[in-house]
Length: 382
Image 1 (cartoon, one colour):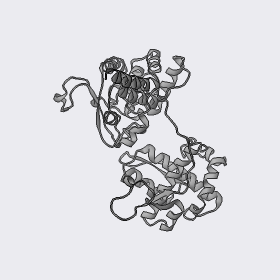
Image 2 (cartoon, one colour):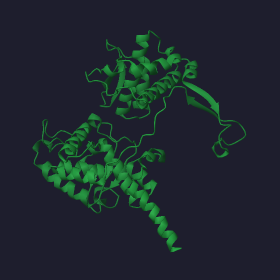
Image 3 (cartoon, one colour):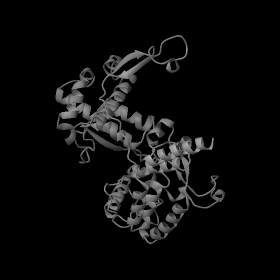
Image 4 (spheres, rainbow, N blue to C red):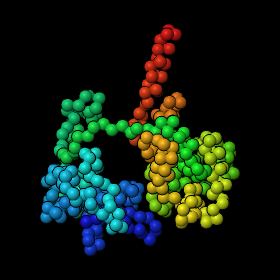
C-alpha cells in the first residue's frame, strides 16, 4: 500500500491509497475523496492523511490482519511505527520517499489522528462496524470538571478521548530574529528573492500563499476602486484557487486582504522590472516565476521558497537554516510587539479560530522585559 496522487478532469488533485497492482483501497479512497472534495481540505492535507492511512494498511498486511479488526491492537501499530524499518522506507507511486520518518512521538500522534479520522468516516458510511470506535476512544463524563467547564443543564456531558496517544513535550517554534531576517535580505542577489523574504517576514504569508499569488491579487495603488476593489491602501489579496499547481494555494478557504508597507511596495516595483526581462514569463499570471533556471517563466513551486531561504541562510553565514514559517512567526510577534492585538494577528494570518493563532503568541525575552518595565513605570507614576 502506498499514497498515490489522482488528477481529476477538473484539474483538482487529491491523494488516495493503492496497492502494488495500482488497485485503489475502497475505504481509504472514499475517506480521502471526502476530505478533499467534500470537506474542502487542502491537497497537502490529503497527501499527509493518505500517507498515514497507507502506513496503517501496510502494518495490517504485515500482521495479516483485516484493517477493521486490527484497531484492537493499535498499540502494536504504534510500536511498529516507533521501531520497525518499514515506515522510513515506504515510497509513493512517483518514486519519492515518504517525507514522514515516523520515530518521534509527535509524528506518531499525527498518524494516529489520521487513522482515527479514517475509521470515523468508515463507520459513518457503513464500511466498518460502529464497534471499532470503542477500540479508538474511551468515553468519560464531565462530572469532575470545574463548574464553568461543564455542559449547561442538569445532565452529564460525555467526552470521548483517544485511547492511543504518546506523551510529547511542549514544542515552541523558534521565530526568526529581526537580525536574521535582515541578514537574509542583505544576502539576496535578486529582486525576486528580496520580495520572497519580505512577503514572508513583513506580510506573514504562508509559503503556499506566496507561491500562489497572481498579478491580479496585487493592488499597490492608494485607491483601487477603479479595479473594482474597495479595500483602501496598498494590499495583496490571498485567494484560494483550486487550479493552483504544485500546491501553491492558500490553506484557508476564506479570502483575505493583507496590507503591505512601503518596503514591500518598493520590492514589488523592483521585481516587476526584473520579471519583465524574462520573455517566457509574459503569459504567466503568477507573480513569482522561475527567472534563473529552467523551465523559465513557469510558476515557482512552494518548495522552491525553502530552497531560496536555505541558500540565503548559507550565504548570510547564519548558524541555522531559516524556514518560511519562522519568518511568519516573526511577523506575528512583531505585530504584537508594535502594540497589535490578538484579533489583528488572527486576521492578518488568516486564521479561522483564535486557537490557531495561539502557537504564534511566543513573546521574546525582550518583549517580556518591556512589559514588566511598563508596569513598573505605571506604578511609579501612581
